[in-house]
Image (cartoon, rainbow, N blue to C red):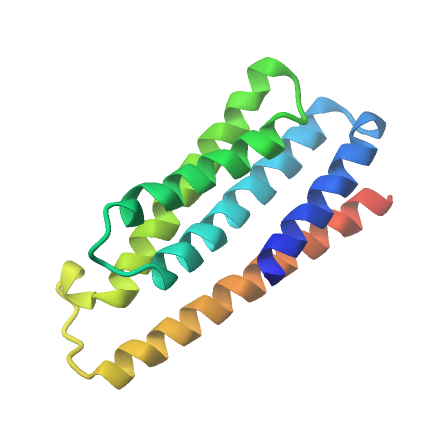
Length: 145
């Protein structure tokens, strides 16, 4: 819920102040927030959903594309593909990271203990949440000036 709140607050702030800045600055901000937000949301969705469902593979990517489209719609039409691309790439990266965190044998990582897998899962998800919060803070801070 924290990640969704950060996304909505940043969308509102960027949408309100997008006319104050040039397209290059807005494109950079949208690129940063679309990639980290879609990575974080896709990771959380991948970790929370069970493994045996088909929707597990498609939902994180679609969520990333939606976040990219949401922030890409703030800039002009040719540059809005940048938001879609960064959202899709963040969604795919989050999905892959979540799959590897749940099953390290996918990358031939020799971790057998379930407690070590759970520890890695918690550490990485907390790190992603912290990274997302820092990027969102810097974006809000850059909008003040």
